Amino acid sequence: MSLLADTTPLRNPDFRRLWLSSVVTVIGAQLSIVAVPQQIFEITRSSGFVGLAGAFALVPLIVFGLWGGALADVMDRRVLMLITSFGLGLTSLAFWIQAALGVDNVWLVLVLLAAQQACFAVNQPTRSAILPRILPGHELPAANSLNMTLVQFGAIVGPVLAGVLIPVIGLSTLYLIDTIALLATLWVAYRLPAVPPTGASRRAGWKEVAEGFAYLATQRVLLASFVVDIIAMVFGMPRALFPQIAHETFGDPVEGGLALGLLYAAMSAGAVFGGVFSGWLPRIRRQGLAVIVCIVAWGVAMTGFGVAVGLSSPDGSNTGLWIALAFLAFGGAADMVSAAFRSTMLQEVATDEHRGRLQGVFIVVVAGGPRIGDVLHGVAAASLGTAVAAAGGGVLTVIGVLIAAAAIPAFVRYRVARPRSRG
Image 1 (cartoon, rainbow, N blue to C red):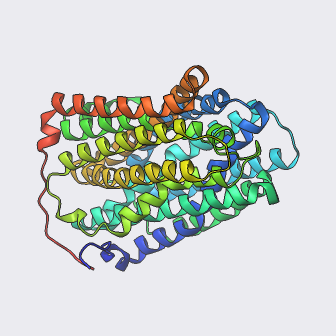
Image 2 (cartoon, rainbow, N blue to C red):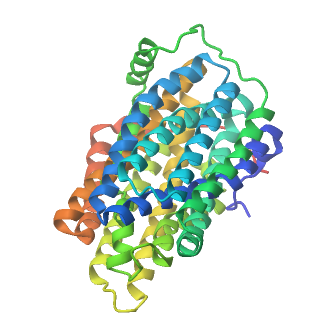
Image 3 (cartoon, rainbow, N blue to C red):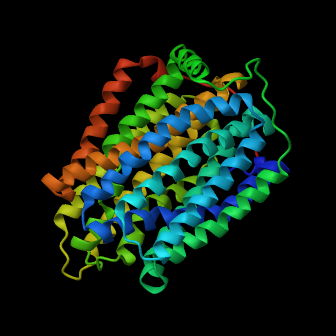
């Protein structure tokens, strides 16, 4: 039983409400995550345009992620979470309107995506920076694991539902479901206690953002955690290829189908498995080394996924699809463990007056890295094919993270000590 997830943080009513609200919202969000690239692919029939969506999302993620982290250090984090959750709801509503009207304008979809990511980039560092204010430090690894498990559960259900429902109810209804689901987040943010800033600064300008980077430069362990995640997500995240792979390799119709949903869900299925059996995470002291091992495993899994795609053909056989899904699931489990440790490092090592800004950097890395990966994979697939793009990215991930480990030995040696707590 010690291998099962530690549920101690759920005894805290504020964390419990945040966690339970995510059951609805993450499923709705994942419906849109599938719907946006699928709509772009339907309009353009090009993985290059799907990859271009990464560029449109990346710029607001960087700008508003960094600025939003600064805001989270000078504003009441509850108020900021309310504002940004409302903004996310408005962008989802706009997605629904354009799809329902059949506008079919790829540039409008990309602009709406940019607006949505701007709200997301402020919302997520704020949400993460709240946790150390409502939970003791020794419960943070378990809390992060619970959060990621739930998010990944939604990432299983959402894509599978999207793959099944797109041919039945259409893309516009998926956007509408996401809009309605965001009401749960608004309710939970309203119920949170006030979370006022603790630092002396009452400004959130670029000077304060620069101060956050200056602080980060003094924290080699945190800096290294960002570097290795960038390597993993930029080179090793092949999600921009999923619509083309589902159609050309596994026989889905152009408008999407079950294979598309399974590809998007497979990583999350592995992550949920890793989260359910995450009871051992709080006992790991060498967290830096654990992150390196997990990212190497991720790179190997993505290499295997690319090879499986290359050896498959749309002949009606499901063997190649299931092998490809197994590699994605294995990679998802490794990524969940890596992310749990990296989140815990950030929440424990950073001081509260810098935590919002560093969470802003974190969200830029975690969400921005895959967006750059979308662009690179889209370009690579256009010239080399989807299989080579995916497998080559996995190989580059392994090489890159091993070089980073050798260059920053302090990260590999990083240890943490904390009291044990079981629920």
